[in-house]
Length: 304
Image (tube, rainbow, N blue to C red):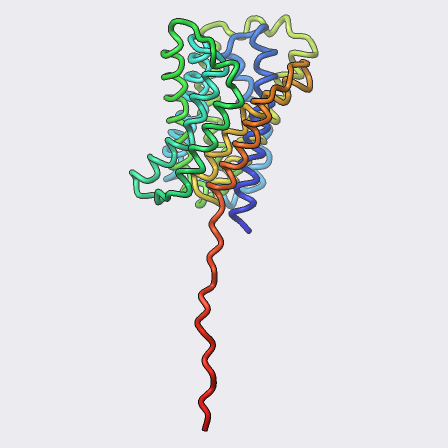
C-alpha cells in the first residue's frame, strides 16, 4: 500500500508542477526567471519551516547537512537555472519532451549505481510514457528555432540533475523525513538564487508588482514549491526513484489542460491520445504482472 501512495503522491506532485508553468509564464513578463526561482523557493522555505520545526526530532543529523545542502544546490539551484536557460534556445514543447527523459535517465543511473534493478517491464513503461509526451506535444514539435539543440541539451542536463537528486536523496529522506529534508535542501537552493538575484538587481521590478503578480508568486511558493516538492520527497520515501520520476511526464499534460481551461487553448486529438498513452506507460512501469499461483494436480488419498 505504501508503494501505491508513493506513486499517487508523485503523480500529484507533477500535476501541480504542471499548473505552476502557467504562473511562471505569467510572471516572466514582469520579472526575470532567476528572481522567479528565488521567489518560488524562498516562499516555499518560509512555508515549510514551521512544519519542519514541529518535526525537530526527525531533523537531518548534522553529518547529513553537507549532503542535503549539496542536493539542494543540485536540484533547487542548478535545475531551475538550466531549465530556464534551455527555454531561451528551444521551444516549450521540445523542452517538455527533453525533460520527459527524466525517468529514462533515473532508471539508467539507478541501475548503473546498483540502486535499482533494470527490468523489461519498467523499461517498456518508461518508453511508452515518453512516446505519450511526444504524441501530446506533436504540433509544437513541428517547428524549432535554429539553435534548438542547445536548449534540448540544457534541458536534458536539467533532467539529469533531477535524476541524481531523486536517487541520492532517498537515504537522507529515510533518516529524517520528507518535510525536514525538503526544507533544508530547498533553503540551500533558495539562498543561492536570492543572492544571485540581488547581485543582478533582478528584484527591481518588484516595486511595480500589483495583486495579480503577488498572487502568482505566492501560488508558486505555496503550491509550486512547498507542496510539490514535499510530495516528491514523500513519494521517494515510499517507492523507487524511477517510479517517482516517471510521473514527471504528467507535467506537460497538466500544463496543456490548464492552458485549455484558463487560456482557451484548444484540446487536440493528439493531446488526448498522449494523455491516455502517458497513463498507460505509468501503469506498466509501476505495476507488477499478476503471477498465477501454481497448483499441482490433485492427489487422491491413498486407499487403505
